[in-house]
Image (cartoon, rainbow, N blue to C red; front, top):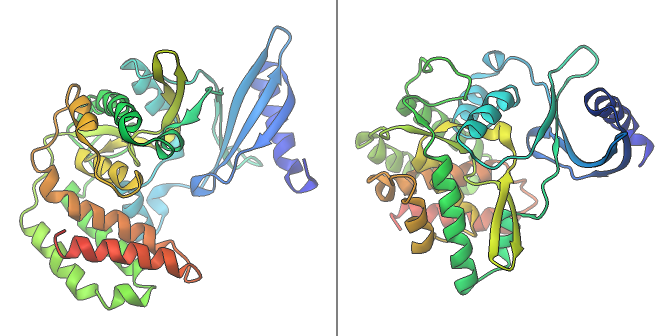
Length: 329
């Protein structure tokens, strides 16, 4: 461990001792995490056992109500909130969703500007890593398991969108929030000239969907990117071990969550095995197929807005995908 991360090492040692009465035997940096978070695999030695742990440090960005309007709104649509970890964990646990054991959760304090979470380290590999190396029947069988697990999480519903610990609906209705965020995302993506050239075409496409918009029947608990978790294989096949990135779970439009998950699977539509398994637990919104291109445009523009100009191949790939959705393909 280099001197550059010594303050983090010292902090984790203090947290581990306070939470578990143990000492750090081994620490592996698994960063970078999203939203500036840092993730460490830590082996902890206690007087009675050795515990494989995950320690996650998420910077305290302050009260989200004080953020700029564009950041505040876009984070509500496609983001996360570290302070909601406890509420999300409790709700997932209440519904029997597999989770890592939670050892401790620390809120930011003076001199420690992080949300700090210590959990058991789940064995296996993450869902997307496993899926990416499979094909054919093996991938279809895995998709059935993923659909089952995501459908089970999406059974957790309520009548309004937002963080798990949000006590009442946001003043801005979901439709208005989504389209407000969509235009913020479009302006960010216009940092690339290829999107500026397509701006009018995109606006016309947005107007088409805005005129026919309908809210979902309910809002589902979901990770912003769909299912995020760990898998293991045994003699019986793949098993789902547990959900990760718990603080990223919030109540959202199921059409949006499913769209993001589909896009994350190599930009290919998911097959029948996924959808059949998903619908054993959750009802697929009948408007999903119609609104999917709109949600795809949101996500693709969001991704593109974060791509530096030094990555022309990525810019071209995302632009081609945006063009297809603008053409109704």
